[in-house]
Length: 325
Image (cartoon, rainbow, N blue to C red):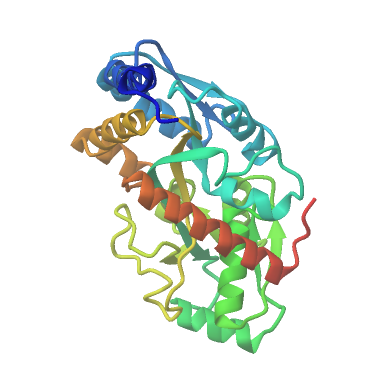
């Protein structure tokens, strides 16, 4: 039996009321403090970035942006925290490149990056620099590759542990250049750079801020940056792509995720605010001084970027034989 228009009216009214409620929430967002969760301790790169952006993000949002540090398990504790948070836009994750490596290294996670999160935007790219000890007789990447081929297994590079950006940067160079160099892991980025400066290893992949004092002292020789584009802070330094390894691109990065199900209007509001803050000339210069390259975009672009990173990391980790836990 066909329902009358009067019988259907409550259904239509309910749907309209639901849509109106969502619109109302999106238009008034935020009405309370927004929490940004980080997977690393205070003082690290993620923390520096979050606290650099927080004052202007708070100003634009009209509500405080609260930074919550939840270190541990390569950031997955923080990621799990946000995955299970309400889908209301009040809990966000400042994710890092490590988040797209972890699924290939750990067999069991309590979340799925593609299923449990809504991409918001990429924020910054953090290129690394391939550097050598001054005693290494190579003035550019091509000469370094030739040296490594002439001395298989004799040259070493420093990293900061299995699956870290410096480790994967080194392994990607090994694969693309068809060379055999030995990975020597250190506890942290500073130790890694000091090892290269003191000659404990022949080369390292290091973040820009960590190498600047040693570069100014002449204790290291930079050869190239690992990103697809040159670094704003070191514009004369070529990329590895330009230096004989076409297609090479391996950097750290930071972006923002929300729990899956956050209304698109709220996501759009967050994207607009982050884009406005990152594009602010004062903020942009502060980021560049930290060795960070501002790079925002749409949720769709960030989602595609995350999928590429997940696939690329899984393939590289399989190829080098790092075992999942």
